[in-house]
Length: 343
Figure 1: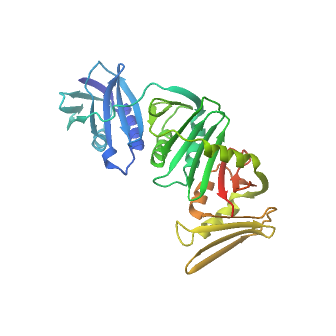
Figure 2: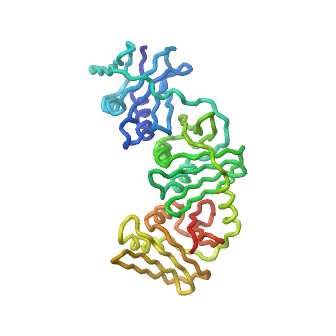
Figure 3: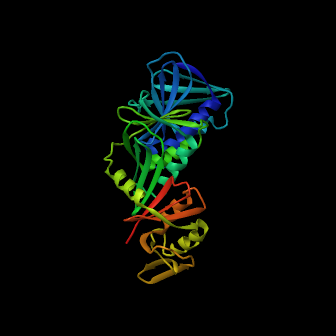
């Protein structure tokens, strides 16, 4: 195998792959090279999210292999122009001007990537990016983001009793998919590098598929849609009862974190104002915001995760709504919601 690649294109591919694979699991920090339909493609994966980056045209070959990402990044960092790549089946040789790099190849590690898929819908890249950033903002390792397609496009994620929920009026065929938190954050970082204005979402045999400048596969599983029905019922019954500035809330939320990241916050409202309570075995904090609430309510939540979600809700002007089981926090647009259980 012999080919010539523009170094700038290779740098773009490595930069995108770097965002996809993440920095935590070192075993994932590698790059796959494979011939596909007349082109050389480079691949990277975090074990669930996989990207395929089409680099250049090349002659047909059956050879595919894997190389270490960090060594490639270091080698091409100061290079410009073109880089020549050839392989004897055991080693890969990279030559650029007066420098050479010889690497022993590993077997190609991403053999189930899906190029073919059924399209579900098109959505603005910035809208999808910001929605995914919001809905996953309060999550931790071991959590998931759920996506539902059908009469509308919905994104849902729950952690520590906080449910972040997105509603978009995008109709498609019915489909649902659950993706792990870590892949959702890697996808956000990857999408931030892309230039395309639209993203096409679809599904293959084993993955959800996203297509923009490049093609992505995301592993996961199908879902029971009962949760969506319950949230939609709460949403349809929710009544707006007050409006408030995010700025007024943020100070008290920050102060409520006095005992650390996992501080429990009791937020209560009545005609006398909004009250913020945080306590531990040897400490008690109380804050009072003098803004009358027409509805009585009380919820207990995590101050840190609530603040993270509010910061990505998309507006400084918030509305409070109350349903039978939840306090809902949203914006005037009513596209993104935070559900907090009532007590």
